[in-house]
Length: 222
Ligand code: SAH
Ligand code: DHB
Ligand code: MG
Image (cartoon, rainbow, N blue to C red; front, side, top):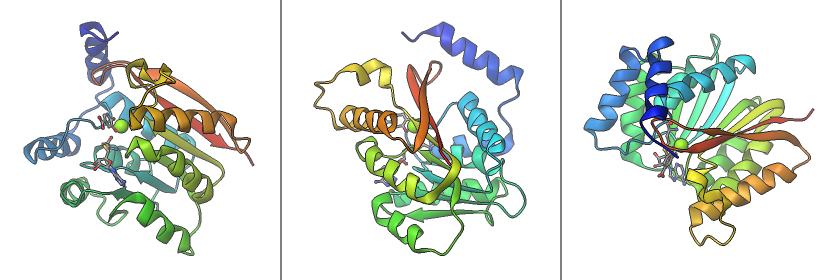
């Protein structure tokens, strides 16, 4: 299901819409230099997240799963002046690379990287007397996606947007009997999202340089 054509199309889109620049390139190089896995969103998906955040008028964005900050930079670029992004990362080494990349992209003041397991840092966010988030992007450990959905529904305002990466996993999501915690987590998340009356949601398949996968996208009902 994946192959040179889909990768060629990703490259075509990337060139046509000019989806790389020095800050994004530097973030990818730093990630690679530091030995981080090459699992950030594609440039086309990064731009898609940016456009969604713009469409949602997002002033406050929550990201779960930072890696090197590549998707963070795309999302931060959608913020208006005074906008804020909070991104949660378990691995302190990833968080260090991300902070440097985010600073290098000019968002040191607008973005905070909180180190720790998201299930440990999310309760502290809920305790803050801050306005709710306008958008959440879920992209951390897939076994905890159902819990991240609940936290997102608590932290994002009505009318806000929830997006989750990697919900198709080359079709392995179809395997109801899978023992893989990733597949079980993604299936439980997809089912919870589909059955939740607080949201309108769907899943879009993606193909390209990151293989065959998909993103879930939801808007919280008023
Ligand atoms: N959003 C990034 C990619 C994230 S990859 C991008 O597209 O650029 C997934 C990240 O989630 C990894 O850095 C991993 O360390 C982190 N992660 C894994 N388990 C986590 C947890 N329990 N809490 C927070 N982050 C976690
Ligand atoms: C993996 C995680 C991701 O967030 C992703 O986009 C691709 C792969 C992984 O853990 O394999
Ligand atoms: Mg992902």
